[in-house]
Every structure is written in structure tokens, then in C-alpha cells.
Image (tube, rainbow, N blue to C red; front, side):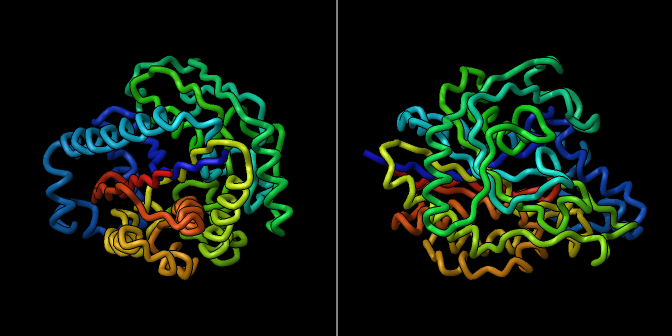
Length: 353
């Protein structure tokens, strides 16, 4: 009999770094020649940001942030172990990794048999060594669930939801980091991850996926309209996708955990804050709507508002919220973990069967 567990979490890359490197994205912004001079030092920042950065470059704040994140990740892992799914569906974004100029699908179910991944081979130097001291050639093998992935893609197509699927990767061996980090963080204590995984790509970066290669845009050389790509699927479409996935799983014989993996607003995507800090107020507003199960507020969010607030990757969460709305679920547990200097706010949410 089908059962569904819903989880929301983060795949925040700097969590894999050591505390002293966790604020490096902010320090990259401070070196951007397009940043106004008045914002280059803490004297020009909002008071909470100055306080968090302190006199140690946010190292102590990073330690507190890590403790808060790992506490929630361990709860998520315990819930996953208790639920014992047949497989896990992870909604994640591809940041110019597997999908590049050859094709950018709005949605794609990755029906891989197995994935051998080396997460530390391509880590940017500025993030430093990983917190587990694992070697660059350390391999992780993740088992897929092709039967579940094919059945899901087939059901979505039968629901008139035009969803791509793939049996092999294109440009990126293994898994893009949104999916792989999710697995690594759910196994933060390195006990092993025994669950089969169906990665479900959403084109969250949309207008920036090719033009910015899924990464940071320069304040000194902003992306013009001519350089931008076509947009992401809308929040409404992602919400409706999640609802369609919930219907598909409900008709299946499997126990499935649906996981949305992303941080919320990202500083490096938020132009109105000069890439210095996330849009905390926008995150708080959506979090309040999540807490009160105001799913109409989520579904009616314009894509322009998501892009303005650097919430691009939250399209993964719009899919999860759509699935939970379809199932009539409210969050049983949730927390919004805020930061001014560590690039992005993070939310965790649990929707029990």
C-alpha cells in the first residue's frame, strides 16, 4: 500500500566546508568591483549582519549554524529510517552540471540504475577541504530505483504533465550536487545511506542557468536581458507538478519519501541586497504561509517575486508543498534557520503520513 513521507531540507554546499570557510561566498562578493564602496566593510552593513560576522569573519556564527543544521538533518535521517521507504524522490536543481547548452528540460526524472559519485573532485578551491577530511577521489555509490522512476514518469505523462526522463547522465558523471549533497547530509555521521534514490530535476535557475553557468553573477557585469535565458517553470507549475507526483505515488504500491532540497533565498542571487545577504523578510513571509498551510499563497507566488528575492531554488519546495496540499497535509514540524552572512536561510519541514 502506498504511503508518503514529506521532508524539506537544504543541500547548502558550504556545510561541507569547515567553519572558517563557510562565509567565503560573502567574501567573494566583497571583492566584486561592482559592489558600492560603502558596503565593502561591516560599517555599511545592517546591524544583525555586523553582529553575526563579528571580528572572526563569521567563524563562530558558522559553528552555531552548523550545529543548528546538523541537528535538523539528524532528525530527518531518523524519520527516514523509521519510515523505511522503498525509494526516495529528491527534487533538486541542476546548476549547469548535467544539463547544459545541449538541453535544459523544465523537469526531468533521472531513472538511473546506480550512480558512482566523487563529490570532492570539483569543489571550488575557495570552499577549502571538506569537514570529513575525505580524499578528493573518495567514491560514493547511490542506488537508483528505475522501476519507480519509470512508473512515475509514465503516470505524469498520462496526467498530461510533459516530463522528461533519462536513463544515463549527459555532462556530469554521478549526481549533480543538489542531489548528492542531500544524500551526504542525510548521512552526515557516515553510517551509510541504504535507500534507493530517484532524482527529480527542476530547472530552478531558469534565466541564469546558461548565462551565469548556474553560479554567481557579477555586480560589475550584470546580466542584460539579451544574455538571459528563457525562464524557469513557474511556482504554480512546480506546485501542480508536486500535486501530480503525489497522485502518482498514491496509485503505486510503494512507500516513498518525497524530499525537497534547497536553501531558501540566496544572497548571491539577490540583486536588491547587492548580493550581501538573503531576503530575510521574503523568506519569513513564505515560512509563515507554510506554517499556517496557506497553500494558495504559495501557488499564487509570481516567478518574478521568486527571482527578485533570490529564491530560485525554492521551486523544489513549491513541488513539495504542492504534493502536501494534494494530500491534505500540514507541516508536523518546521523551522526556519536564518543567517545574514552565510549566503542563505535554511528551512526544514516534516509532513508525516
